Length: 397
Ligand SMILES: Cc1ncc(COP(=O)(O)O)c(C=O)c1O
Image (cartoon, rainbow, N blue to C red; front, side):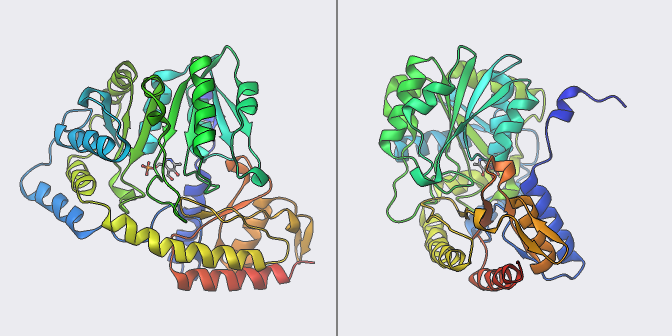
């Protein structure tokens, strides 16, 4: 069958496929340590599950309004007002099947052949492929580890052409764990205003911050900035609800309406039961995310400290999200019994085979120098996984 060209333009999500390989190995009885999954290992809090149960018992199991139920849109409007001081009407909110779906709807509504989208690199894997799936061109804005992955105004400006439609902002970021400070966000906003760009602000890790870091939504930098920003968020990471598939967008009415129309012709509504659960999550306060982040913080320190002790590896301390992103250039061109390691992909394959440790190589994130490890797993797994990595790396010559 001759498939559409767009199907050949993209690759399946590498994080999902490595996670699937690790799970398949575990199903065969192999003791794999999974540092690849991008999801909290915590269980979804009880009150959220109870809200879902109540939805099922009361027969709230039918189609809902395609763009999401009013009750959830109100909870999102209230959350954005209370936490960010942002004011939206319900018509400016769209609920989708996870933030990934939110971003996909946005790419569909916004870009077409000839358009460009600026994506700071390293980047979350789906940004580039979603742009490609919609016939547009991703333009990578390289950022430096030594500069904390910050974006300079000049570097951004150099990426913008008359074809540029949007810039993606992801703070706290996956895979780097970096957060943007106010000056960086002001620089991006200034360029976006002057060059007439939409800002896509993916804030899915907003509650997962360390060392007193504070989340700043770029949309709060002024009414003119908010008017050209689509805030993307969801309940997956903050409330350990990755499987429930609820994400949302808040932004200019015309963009949100176009996204909602596209959703109405593709997935229809997000799951009715999950929407009720998401209301409970957003109305339930921050005790759960705070407790989770406290534990992530312990794991973050342990993992980064252990990584930095590995010869050939250096790791920045991330200030947000739940990923360590060590630089492994010191391990490249080293040899093992059956070959050599010439890239992070080779290293990830070696670690999976030799140490049964699953990590994600940096290349799909736009980095040829790093691997990504999630510390959203137990302290025990972190200790055992790092012991195994140490042992496997000691065999390299
Ligand atoms: C940066 C970023 N944005 C969005 C998502 C999508 O989250 P979900 O579709 O589960 O809401 C992820 C998930 O890994 C992510 O890392």
